[in-house]
Image (cartoon, rainbow over all chains, first blue to last red; front, top):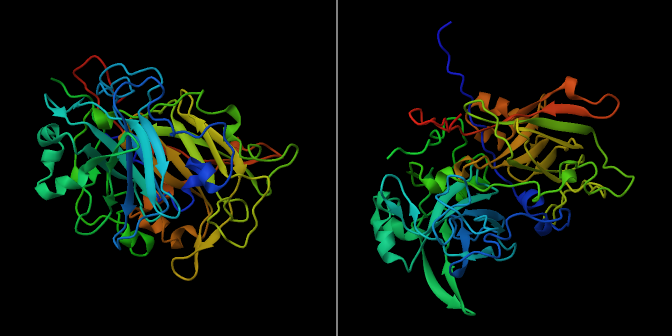
Length: 206
Length: 242
């Protein structure tokens, strides 16, 4: 028998479907079952850095907001460290850097509060501009979509970011950059994600 | 500088593409431009971690986690168990597995589900657990029913349980569905058939596991989940992928 490579194949993805809330956000499905739902508190109480709000919609190819979408965010803390043994350094006690949010059933709007992340190490000697890693699932999405949100007030860091610079079409880089404004004393970043169409958001095969 | 062990490139030939017109909802929700391929940075190789303080011990028992005291949900009592492995066939320990499903009649406890079959007052329909040090997990539940859905006029979903898994890096994040061996609806389901590879469908089909049944109590199905594997950094003193 010649040598066989004993690798397994990744399980195939399937859509999260319209009732994803039952499993991942049961309160939104209309019932209370767990002591605590996961993903509501991204930073914990001790996180340093600027408190911000991120909001947006996920819009389909017809221009309609998706009302049954679920997003997860994975981010570094203000020092640019992820809460992980290979994350680049220590994080504050209670900082997880992961959150889960669903869109409103009527408007499709979603939002979460967190701290603005710092720059993180890129490959080789590069530095990555502050960004949020986003993962998007919904009915009609067969495999979760990965994208990144960058910060509109970080023009200099964004211009040097190795990932943004991979995008050959310069105008498409703008689909990953959220504009900053203020509301009730809190900085707000608006990030609308277009699944399809002229301004389709850049998605990554990671 | 040596790069960290990266995750293997995702094998897109076994994954459903975004645009699958027989599953109509995918048409307007599928990106049309090519994805930009990224080599892993720290943002990709890291991911959230969970511990026993995040969940409760009974969260994996759907027979009791929503039932009134002394009552049970209606339906075929099953054990769904298996391991979370990576593509190197190594167990993925301490990772969060979350499931959700319809009740035995094919009805979800969700304010947007209006199917004729009734809600079961003793069944919530969700559970969660952490894999042990060997990557093993188990749930007790009832076998979900098939149900109709609006796609073509007469489409029925095969019995299935939705499964969400994390792994150690955010690029391993996966949501899939577990089907049951022998279900005649599997080969005619437009959602199942978004998967282009018959072996990959087979891999999502839980097998009857008679040895794991509890006699006179519950029948068992085995369902292993495979997450992306990671390259070893062979010339360092640590075999990260293994």
